[in-house]
Structure formats: C-alpha cells, structure tokens
Length: 437
Ligand SMILES: [Fe+2]
Image (cartoon, rainbow, N blue to C red; front, side):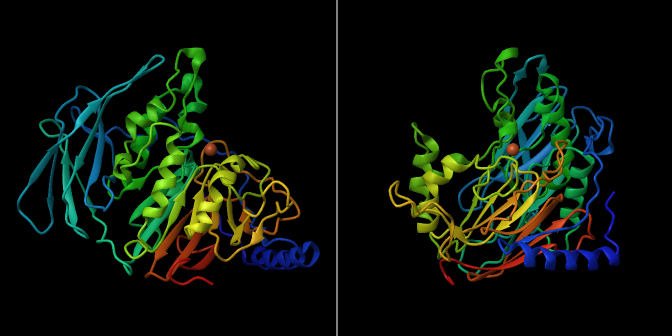
C-alpha cells in the first residue's frame, strides 16, 4: 500500500524545509513528507489477519505481557470459543527437557447483546532471565505452541529494545504498521503500547466482535513478545444508553496487567498515590532508563486533542523533572511528534511564568499515536510550529527505542510509506540520570 517518495519529491522536501526555517523561525521541523490521502478503512471481518485458528476450541487471540516487577513472570492470555477448556499453560525453556505447567483463571463478560468467549489469563513465574521459553495452550483440545524470550536481569548496562505503537486499530494501515514493526531490522523485544487498541467502540453498540478480531490480528506479535498496555479513551466503553455502565469492561477482562507488582495501589485517587510512591522507588543503578507511557500527550502541536492533557501535566510534570524521566511516550493524536527537552513548571499563579522553556533536566515528549486506526490521520497542525516541537509529521508508523547502555539509547521513528529500514526521525538519547547535558 505504501509508496516511496520519488527522488524529485525528496529534493523538494529538503527545499521546503529550508523555506520553512527561514520564514517561520519558530519551532523545529514540520515534515513536508507527502503521504497517501486515501481514507483509512478497517479490514473486513473475513480478512486473513482475523482468521480463526482451525480445530475444535482452538486458542485464539493469544498474547503475553510482563507478569511481575523484575521480568521473571509472564501473563499468558488466550480465548477459547466453544467451551472453557483447559486452564493450563505448559512451558519449558529451550535448554531443558523438563516441562512445567501453571493453571490460570477463566473470565467471561457480556456487553449489550454480545457474549464473550472464554478469556484465559495464566501467570507463569520464576522464569530464568534472558531465556527462550516455549509454551502450549489449548491442552486437551487443539494445542497451539508459541515462544518468547525473557528479558535480561536488571542492571546498569543491559541493552534492551522497545517497540512503540499507539492508537493501532484494525485498518489496512494498522496492518502495515505491525508488518513494518515485525520487519524492522532493529528487532523490538517488547512493545510499549500507548493506548487505544481495537476501536471497537466506533461500531454500533461498541460491537465487541471487533475486540475479538483485534486480538486475532495482533497475535502474530503479541503471542511472542510482551506488549505492555496503556489504557486509552477508546478502552472506556461506557455506554449507559445501552445499559453498559462499567468503564473499561472489555479491556480489563481481556488485557490483564501486573498492577499489584507496584505494591502501593491506593484506594483513593489511585493513580496519583501510586505515581507519587512509584517514582522515588526507581533504582537508576538497576534500571537506568525511566520511561513513562500515557495516552493523551502533554506537548502536542496538532489541532486535535490540543491541551487535553493539561490538567494531568499541571499535577505531574514537576515530578517528571525531579525524578529525571528520560522520555514520555503518548498516543491519542493520530500523528507523530517529538518535542525538545522542555518544562513548564515555574508557574506559581502570580509570577506569570507559564511558557514552556528549554530544560535539559526535562524529558523528551513523543507522540506516537500513528498506528493506523480507522479514524485516519491528524493532519491539521498549529502554526507557527511552537518552540517546544522539534519534529512533527502526519504519517502512520512505529518507533524503536534501542537502549545501548546506561548512558545512551538510539531512537528512530519509521513511517509506513518507507522501506522497513528507513528512519524518518532519529535522536540519540543521553540518560538524564547518568549522562545529563
Ligand atoms: Fe485516543
């Protein structure tokens, strides 16, 4: 589906950017990359990527996520359609003949006139670091085998590579995004997903069949490496007019996360209390890189969701600077943007200091809500480009955050229209704790 820019349009793009810089003299770069303008369309229900695996009660929508704080546990999830079937996961390391098993739990839910399949979640624990494991689900009916590699033990100079995907949906563009991610020569070892998964809520009565198709669509990656979830607004599924009044019902039934691992999950204003206690606990000798995921971006210069994250920014931004967060990834805006290192925390209601300023102790903010969902691209930007905005482009794509050691990580954003290896925006990150400045 993607088309590469011809050499002449590349030349044009360069000239155009020079013109931009000369005339506007404000923020960073607004890419003039010319992308296709066809409407973003969801793949039909009979698409090959939504295929139900053959066999009686065959496990489908298989996916894994990290299951504890250190990386020695994995939550394995799957859905069976006909009957609950076995709750067991059988697993073994590639170095061992000895097979182990764990037993999980089964969940079902109803949503308006939809009834879910049997949703399984099973945590397997005490895994060895940096080890390939095979696992089998569907024991007793149709067995399916998958594999994953556990992360290395925590330490100051442990390389690790994250993929970044947001606002994915299930359109033809979504499929290109996942394919690009899979084919990226810099192999991501886990996906940091910044919210808005299936977009089932864009269908009449939030047709939850589209949660099932989405689960089958991402299985080809999510069954083999952990996808770390963030909830977005499209996960809320609060529809009182059809009697659905429990927010996040489909999402929480389908995508379990190890939130108890933080051990401080409070009863009142839980997110605030949790974050307040979590940030000082991060040991930068064990985990040098501090990455925050959220859905709605704080530094955004598109005319979509502009300033929606403002109340959250006012509450938390000073903490991010204080605790030397390296990078904040968000989605929500269906486009790409990278900020300068800026902060806007000096304001105290009487001093009038309410403009973001360059701040080398502050994180870089990256909007990566460009997974390709059916709502299409956010193409309308604010002009002039604000000073906090370093690079912005309305294209679909994914990114890779490639941690080399405690001081350096290489970051690259890949637009879907390019070949797999092309990085449209790149940045060397130096760690805010170990190598500031
Ligand atoms: Fe969103």
